[in-house]
Length: 315
Image (cartoon, rainbow, N blue to C red; front, side):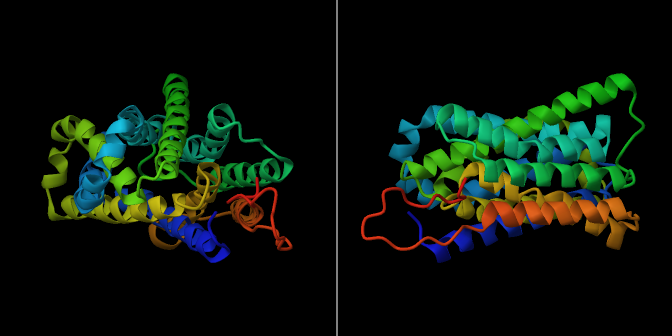
């Protein structure tokens, strides 16, 4: 079991990753000519290849273990490829607000249900309270956030499809996070696990990038936006996320990423010029309370032979 300092380093790593992910919406507004599929494929595609490249040595060292777990790695890669396509398409069809609520707000529930199904991990009262705070906060924040230039006027049919795609995004995000943690628990280094998952996922996204990525080369501005999204919110953030998963359960990690819509809202206010109402600030407070409840562990008295070690998330 990891030490307390190591646990908090993992928490900080996931928090930084969530902050970086929160910049994606604002960054995308600087390249309105690029389609959601183009943004998704360049972010995960190029970023995933970079992750695989820097993880070449760890992947080589763990090649036998990765081959023995090849079905898990392949399943993770498929989820990695599907997630951004579903996430950005959900925002296009249902709007940025609804897309974020469904995709990000429901991911912790999806992760916990996955852990409950496969790991027999119980869902206790503390976790349920923190999730209730978090999801309520996301709903308040999104309800108070004006539509961005990326959002279209959705018809009822478009909205329904967008919500469905948001659910797909939430599940796939939670699933590849859970698989990454499982690979790490089986002795595979986090860089090897993340590099192999995202490298294969990136290869699956290459055809989409070839079809939709032409506008990225149409101007220096569009290219710069694509480069930023691939290197910072994808490559760097997922290195940090993988580091966090070495000591943090997938359900807790996805709960911490509820910080993402908070960052996105703050950037929208300070950079894009959107207004945030009192309801929005109340939502930020609820999400902060969610993170506090979910991440701070109660101190326990040291015992010579503890019967049950404290879990990463105390859930």
